[in-house]
Length: 468
Image (cartoon, rainbow, N blue to C red):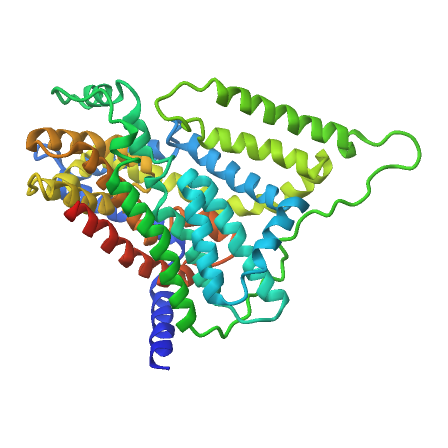
């Protein structure tokens, strides 16, 4: 009883203290401005002029049209909408319903959702995030329809746990980019850092290394177990309020008795579009050239496959459009909040703040402690630069240069940055935005439990970085 009261008190505390994700993004923007003004202002520049320079950088960052800016935001909106559209098909709904038969309590539902989301994230982070969110929503709907109490926040946290493991899988930004021949010397050249750098870091030294396999397996087993035991001890006193049903689009008969059907309703036309898209995607994947065998599994490829499968499984343009109208509302958070984080990233790049934060930790490192301290610095930087690819682009050269100076282990240090980047995702709601849109949860319901996953992750990552 005491444990339940403590858990309830923790949730009330988070609800009282945590603002909305948009407010968090605005607050982080202000904090970044203040820290940059204090730590990076050149002596010869007055504060008002430097503030204006940072403000101009922030404004440019808001409308960043590079691959890591608005283009990326649009990719994320598409993967959210198309994933939702795919889940609205009768076939996918049937598959999810089969899985839901085993979700009978909060405890086993949390374990099943966490295991499935983490496993998918190791193939691709987008798959783990979106389908984890969809399954979590379906669990909530099941308990809502059966009028059974459920700790829905815990189920959402189970789905979000995928974002603490993805970097150790096949779509990790730092690891996959490091595999590309010539990428590291080119990155260091662009950062104006001279030295004799390796041309690439092979798969078997990062993703396929003993360290990463042990860490990833530990997360895959221990995180679902942790959430299972939390579910066993939590008090399920609320029935999820999901009156707005996340149902599939029924395959109603649309053929007209007289004459030909409308093109919008044509099954032949709709399925043909989908088949063409899938075949084109397979063709491009088979001609992909890269050091990673599965390197073709990127955001654009996933979105392309989701688009093709959605047309095939909905069978007509009309049903696809109906599903689109249902799914489109999920993207509002991303549309507004992503640009704020792009602005933060530009402030940190323009001011050199990211180097200050990173060097403050790595400057006291030794050959043995560098990976662990890199892990801590990456976790800190991730609060301000939550994009794994963006963080690697600006923190990677600092790490590689430090490794060269100390003669430390480069593959291990790359993994350490990857682990730090994903570790603090459990406290940073940036990547939770798609999940919150689908599940209709609030950050206050999610973070009390993702915080516990954060603590477990810190133990797993920290221990293995120090002993292996």
